[in-house]
Image (cartoon, rainbow, N blue to C red; front, side):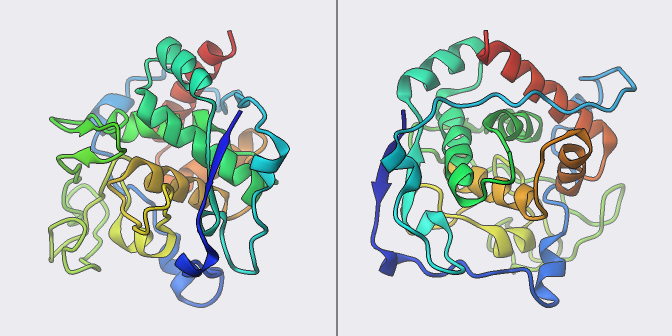
Length: 268
């Protein structure tokens, strides 16, 4: 069961179609040109078969919560409602998977929202959880902690994308998000590059702020980014979407392994 919180349309008509013009090209940059946990994920999978994870469905929300208010053209569902998963489901699945409950809530909320907003995409919470695990350990990389309000502190900032063993991406935000006014760095629990966040940033908790350091915002934005080219159903489509997130086969395999583990445990 999902609960729905609403806000007026006047608070946010900022999300507009991004599929036109040269600006969209920048939005296709890999979100994490270098995953900060790259040293770990290379050893997570050993098989050569290309796989995609099982989709782990969420409990169906009530019809009125799932439909919400109708969105206008070019207006996304985060302008109207945020869908909160059944807390009993969150508690049970967090216990069996080891995913922090606050992170799991964010992944499931994004799943529920995207099921309404982009029903043909077919993304599931366990895919977002697989990415969150590989990118930052669900906001726990280094000394960082994911708090109950969804904020990660201290902020998780990746290495400079300066071309030395990584992509070269000069600064695009004046250091506003990553503290670096020379090179871009990936930011937050899902490791968004500032330029990508500029195009895809979402307000997943309806606080009026779109911040890659907040797990709700980051999870919804990541889901939208993955869904932008269509359905993720099937191995080929799923892997192509994850490759857009980070163009390394080992990365895709690691996310698939994590997502499959989470689905298997949740479905028991």
